[in-house]
Image (cartoon, rainbow, N blue to C red):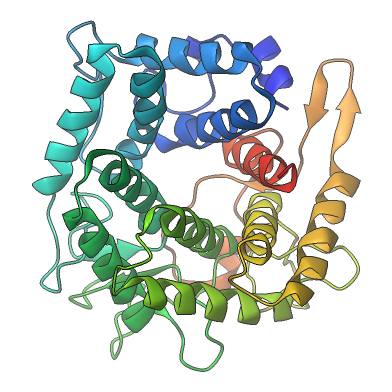
Length: 347
């Protein structure tokens, strides 16, 4: 998959918002970084560095980085680049992103806005966008306040976005209950969207890699991950091994198996078993998901094709809106999560 993308896209054309420091490129490049860590193919690190160099001026200024968690996420790539190259501009760009997060707006409970233009809203995606970066930075640069911060962010999601009956997570929460999609009693949205929960499970696995064993919040993160994975497993398609766009309604008309969320869950189950976070029996869930994804990808003269990937999705009101989202091939939401998954299964 990495070779397919490299052969088809120069770094200035990598799919995603053009000329913008954004997670859509970042998630694929994070997957490529993990692939590099496994196979040490220098071409992959060179490709990551070329994209970063394209996006960052020589003085460390990021050309276009908007005020939203999505645009902070790719800064996690700078940690390895700075460590391996010593190039000062990478550390400058990393530190400037961290400084922006320090000043980033929060709701009255202390939860990060998902975007400045969506005040008071926490989306599940945000745990992936901020959590991996901040905990990786905390571990690399002795900044323990970010462990406390991300523990707090995760607990807000657990306490406000998790459904107490299914233990699944709604897509988002509006702390002020003003949005059209917000439940008037709880402020949550109404749909269990697959990729949003997949972001959470991967984020928790990644954050636990960084959290000190001695941190008092580590046990909470472990419990949150275990609870989510044990309950999400109930909704894996028994034949295909995949999860649906709307996770809890697999048999409802129009619902469909979505590749990126299935890759994220496969990664999470495999890693959680490997790390001893959940029972070994869940390795069957991981393997079934991995085989299910392998069964739907196609091999062409141009490389690998991954189908059934949901495009980026804002918080919406109805089931019908979620299942109507366009399904496309080789979108970075799917290619990036696929490479993350494969790199985990290689360990």
